[in-house]
Image (cartoon, rainbow over all chains, first blue to last red; front, side):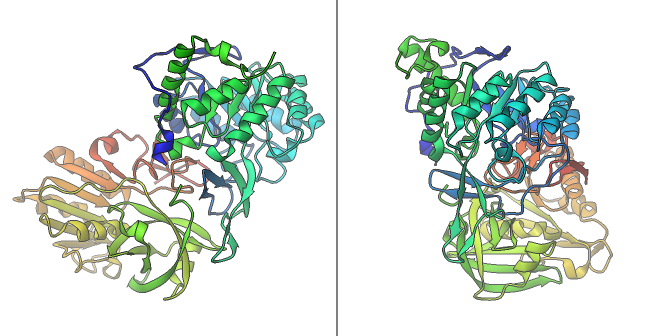
Length: 314
Length: 259
């Protein structure tokens, strides 16, 4: 897979034309580590920042420790991975305590998952003790009662976001699921609830069956598809959300190269998250994409802000 | 992602190495081509998937030596010739090729990846093997690796105590440059101290809870280091930098647990 990670846009030295201010926070670049990837420990978050991430999102945190689904948890498919981790996490209090002792080196968003608005409020309050922002997981496709189970009803989404916003002074992001025909309605509901921005997309619901044993491969049977395979789905979701919302959109889905990053920004993303590419490429993917992005901006004589949503006709 | 989907293989051969450790052999070209120290994810449908080091290869066959520890390892122990198992990988970074005389230091089932290391390198450089276990019957591959010294915790064979207690005697008068090791973390930490004090180099194969095997999920992190993708074999400097190694491991939820 290494070849697909290489920049097709030529890169230059160490330009840093990509620093950005967003959500009241300063980022050295708009490429953040996506939730669920290496974010189980503060050390993992710091590794991503050391490798060039401009911000990081934790593994989703719940009220109680949880060990996740039975294995296999991950299976490779063409152009991506299917995963069903099952939201393993040490619990929001435990993680927040650990995070408070570590200087990660860039803004940290605490991703949280709950079953109802009150749980989200409680999680937000606790996680705010050490994070710089909150990302509401309204979109994990393979866990009961949480994730996309509470993320496809606009009324419920508005109530969850509103409760979370009331529980903190930090910016609150809503991470949306693509497994719906109402992503813009849900995005608008999050905006009405007071979200400072939305994150799109989480994984696409999927499944793999082994044809020799005739058994589903994932321990949880179904899972979520990530990686290059879902990039066009993310581009469309971000494009649609940009038309319907006024808050910033953080794009995520299949970003591996400067080209894939630029495409999502043109669709309307103000910042991006990278997840699967830390496995299919090296951790240096953050620096590589950032350099290519800076070079693209320089060639086109555009600022990052100029580029956001440029694919939309006026 | 070409090797990330399980390949279904038939068990070609099995061997009981000790009361709790069994070896299975599979026709699997991708792992038979791996470096010693690399591992694969073995999948038993309807049970689970676990990371297992490659313990040897022959032509396009690979061997995996598995300690009986839980549900999935128990299912693997029950497999016979002709039964099916899934394999994905190989994964991670393996041992370097030794360029001079070296010591192999294995504890418990940590000897498994070192067996493959011995197979690959014993005809090129002089290797001195030290193996420790809880008891005589749990000592693995003693003859195959031509072990110079063995130890057992209960004194049932060889040195009565830990294998680390005899390393320095073995090193005296030997022109060794490097120790290759795998096994319990206190053993590896002691080997690290010895290497630092004597100016030797070291590589160690590490073990952590691994779920994805490809560097995504973070289950296997030591500090911020991904054992599955950037390890499992680490060099002396990396090992020396860790704050958690030898003291803490992480459970499946990510909580720290003392070792």
